[in-house]
Image (cartoon, rainbow, N blue to C red):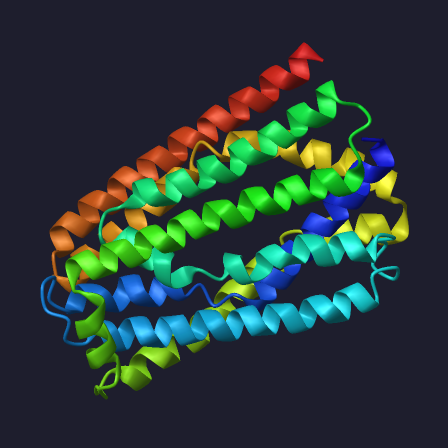
Length: 292
């Protein structure tokens, strides 16, 4: 893979990340927030909640697909010369709208499923990268296809695992029946998801805009170099990222049960770990500067 192709790949991934940021409502946050208020054994209210988050995910997938078509049509303006590869990679967008199943995994303390999804996706991309390294004649389209299949398979594993958990915990038939009912907090759930959509999208949508700007103003080659620099700097932030996945459901559980003292203790531990991470990050950057 040439530097130009790597830069185009970075632009494609950045475009999809922006589309995902604009489209995703992060419905898992609504499910995690409201599910603890329901009984862990009764399906009353659970089916309705899952139905609302599933409808949200479907709407997000449709919205992402519409935006993708628009971006593909104007791909040259965004600095992406390979519109067909952008469309190919865009097949992952509907599968990324899996907030319901992420919420199920988080709320039922099955975070290992999210880790498995990330491992499968990363392992598939790693195999693709090794293929490029050992088989230099590997085409750019083959690389994109490898990345797409890696992501889709990983998301399917998460979705299927989530369905199995739901059926085991409440049974699908009882949830389908409950999903047809109306509850007083339906509007509260929808309002939370709606407001959260704009809170989240405003952050996620601009996370990769800088790469698109570099590609538009300069060239895909420079975007490739810029992407490498960002990847190196992002390695250190990965140390703290798993904490958010683990702690957020615990915060909601403590809040829903009114355990303020335990919540304060949990917040204190979180802040201490954040400070430790910052200290580690500063020292690593300083060591990197001295090394070079």
